[in-house]
Length: 532
Image (cartoon, rainbow, N blue to C red):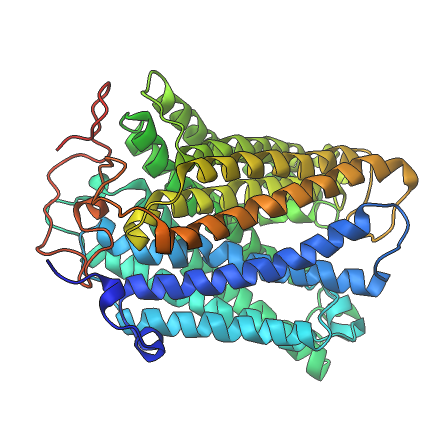
């Protein structure tokens, strides 16, 4: 039997120069986890400050820098790369029966760009941070801010190129390296989701790069691009930024949907309901996601007719998302459901994503959005999608494929406990924010009227529970590396090609080229085993 990829070299140099997609995925895991806890530390200080109404812990300027650091780190250094660059890098070649990605060295280069850009952002944080918010709105970011705007922009710019390279690699790999018999409609939905995400990365990220360059040019050289006093257009930045940043929401969510689509059929022992509709819904979300950026600008002064069109399109994008939720629910119907840790995370994702999606329809309504814009209702909605959705799915994927990644099993009881704790802590943290937002509490304020104190105290208490929930998997997964039971080739009796190789896999993934002869998710409808 071939040695596993973990045994191909133990030196630091062997890891930092590897071209093995699985090792590069672990490099991403390490970096993403570090950035997650840095961003989480900023969130912890924010919630401690907001636990009481007066400004007792940090000043207004420090608070601005904290929520900017939290937003920049979590969006560009965790949420966007988490599932595609970590789980996707590890799994995509194995799921399609390939030995590696199409461009292994480019894959390693993308990790170095990601870490390099991340270190630039962290350097800006250490030097004093940036106070513009993660959206870098003009004219404050170009004319008035005295913080490290350009260095932060440069870091995000470099990280963006990492995303483009990863997306390009995935697209070419899926098109050219599928195993014999693996037609487009035999692909796992996780592959479909990452393929659609890659299209968004390749098409939308250059717009962000261009926008950040224009922002830096105006700030450094005072060229009139966005400043109306110099002949610029004050709304142009928002249009360009959100043309990337709303599709970026689907960069974060589509891979999470792919993870849920792998876990739910496995632990319900049912074939995914409406496979083709699920695949088309993924592509539909990716396409329509490019057409809804203007709903972030309902109160910016854009034309009323434009706002009406963007409102309609925002309702339209909910349809393919709803198809996915209904199909996951139908997959569970009459299934032989096992509430293992990955399944609890997946079900948590579905529930929290649904709440976030439904409240997104409130914000797509022009009349309601006038009241709710820039309140904590928007903060809660965003976090229900991004944290309740994407992070729950990310953790579900880590637990589901951990035996394949590490060759070890984690303690199941602790996995279930962490999933429940995170679900409870998340709702206690962010549901009160819907209520204070509906009552008119604005976001990005470090002090607030006393009538909002009770709900904010509940939110901060929930954040402490959430923090414990996030720390638990770090502890027991690390424990499992040394003391966990050896994992079988297919401990969940799942149906994908990645489960046909050893745990952990050999360097070239398979001892011989696999052949795809079955339909995807080919589970017995009532039995406990996947089809042999």
